Image (cartoon, rainbow, N blue to C red; front, side, top):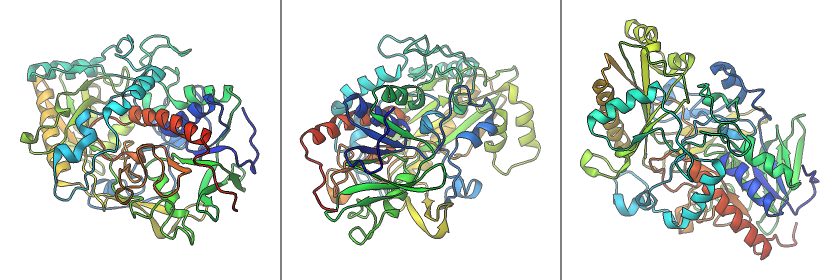
Amino acid sequence: MANIKLDDDSAVVVIGSGAGGGTLANELCQKGIKVVLLEAGKRESAASFQNDEWGSFGQLSWLDKRTTSGSWRVARDFSGLPAWICKTVGGSTTHWAGASLRIQEHEFKARTHYGDVAGANLLDWPLTLQDLEPYYAKAEDKMGVTRTNGIPGLPGNNNFKVMYAGAKKLGYKNCHTGRMAINSRKRDGRPHCRQLGFCFQGCKMDAKWSTMNSEIPRAEKTGNLDLRPSAHVLRVEHDKSGKVNAVVYVDGDGKQQQQKARVVCVAGNSIESPRLLLNSESSMYPNGLANASGQVGRNYMRHMTGSVYATFDEPVHMWRGTTMAGIITDESRHDPSRGFVGGYEMETLSLGLPFMAAFLDPGGWGRDFCRAMDNYANMAGMWLVGEDMPQKDNRITVHATEKDQYGMPVPNVNFTDHPNDIAMREHAFGQGRAIYEAAGANQVYPVPPYPSTHNLGTCRMSAKAEDGVVNQHGQAHEIDNLFVSDGSQFTTGASENPTLTIVTLAIRQADYIAGQMSAKAIDRKSVV
């Protein structure tokens, strides 16, 4: 591993080590570029992960202070935890379930296909599926996605078998165990999945791809990576020309440090990335970095979500096997005849008993709740994931008075469901219920949204500077050596789980940054 000096201004500084930042760091290191990778969390490993829901939650989750507003139920049920993201080396790739789906062609052109949806701030992406296809292929190969490149799918557990039985009776055509970045056979020096059932708690077998077990070790082997865990970034600084030139962070000993930089890439997730840009205001950038458009923090998306669980006469033991063990993709089409634009996926999801008790009916109690818990062994479940509408007032702002442990304003997450989101959720609840009733369920439980890992938008791509924050390469419209490298870039959310696309964009962005550096097109001017 490299040891890059604090005053070395030739390095690329990447903030955040998750799907975007960790992948980008490795791709740049493989090209011979020196990278300082700053991660706010600690470095864990397969050996230190805990197969215990609440223990792991405390170990991996981002639990820094946040506030929440808006009409969404999460603001009431989980006001201090609007998002379930991670603060650890590898970011939320340690926690994710592994679903790896490409965004569909029409979803890159949502404004064109969906039209003028009242109350929505729709925009076409400034790139197409065709632009990303070669990078999707590289990402799928890198991650070992099942059902691609001749890699077999994972076996179906009982949770999947229940879904499959109901899906076939309803006439669904596309139901299988998914495209998953989890080894179905030994690959890339990592073993095959042993079906332990704790995918959300970090994979103790290292069968699931993460930047922690794949990208970062590879980057370290190049000798070009300086990984700094427990490095909480406070702000990004700039020189008199307006180019970014340094990152200020608090290290593991509580000391404030300043790392000089040639290029800065922000990959802290869709809450922390805009918060950092907004907290980096200056006399030159009074509204925050890269925010001349006023779009930083706006258009926050989290996917239309909800869950459906059902109990049966016989045991299902849904917790045996991968957490997300199957998918139905038939409803991901755009079909306005259903009463909404865009589409959604139905994905099996097993929650451990502690999480099930927390999320089934937050704050609930009584006979029905207890009956459901008593029948946990006989329960099957699915998660609903659909395209929610970007709205300008669904946004991340910095709080006027509340501060974190470092004295920085905390983020406020404001979100209200769009009518299209509500209509889609009700349709999805109905179809989920129908699937389980067709499979023989004796009781069905629609479950409200809980803190999501699918946090998107807030620094969106746009063809025109006034419509967004970054261009098609994730490069800030107004500061050409500043990049956004996570799900914040998403112009719209699509219906698919976002991790594969975040990795894909990072691979593409690395090519662009390396080319720009080689051409000296994004070098800072010699002013301080």
